[in-house]
Length: 258
Ligand code: F6R
Figure 1 (cartoon, rainbow, N blue to C red):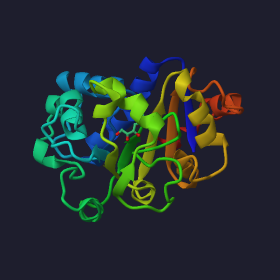
Figure 2: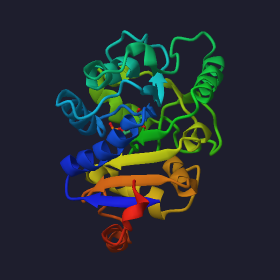
Figure 3: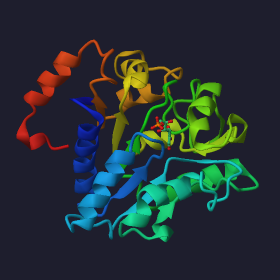
Figure 4: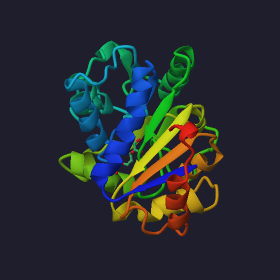
């Protein structure tokens, strides 16, 4: 796992955009996360697209997760959110943005179909991830099977409360979701997790320096051969080996790339 520590959230967004831009140049299949953390990176990518510096015309995208019971048109569905915050503003057609079907009569069938669609697309080349304050990635809450496929999950009370800011009231936050599983996410070629702010410091320390455990689903990054964690100083505050991560980056051989 490579850990890049940046002074602030804006430089996290720049570093993450540099990586995604390289993948877009190769027409890669992108795995996209919603939530607040990647928004600044999406804004930066939109700006680079508008300046003619990059194109997504050969790329397609798979979302990490979706609320069950919200149609795609609902403004808080993750499909609508990613469209509003990113894909509508770049040259990637809605038809090439895939999301789990939150309105499916049989969510588990929809989960299986989603994993099949990802496999048929040749897999996800680079997966953008945020992390929940409870250590979730996608909506794999603590206790999720480390090898799970896309399936229904029940949100943790802490996630419902964290996400209530996007809804009129806590009661409006759907309780159930369809999320790429930890096994699905692990099959991505490159996992890139972003975290900013001091409320993420415990989760970042647990995922990077704690034990590999279903209690901290993000710790599966420890098993992945190509994982990059990009954090600001606030989110890095509880990392014991921060000095070492800076040293590694300062001494990174030029041939290594992202
Ligand atoms: C979003 C997702 C979640 C978020 C996480 C952090 O698609 O899968 O895992 O990445 O809840 O959310 P923010 O970035 O809002 O703190």
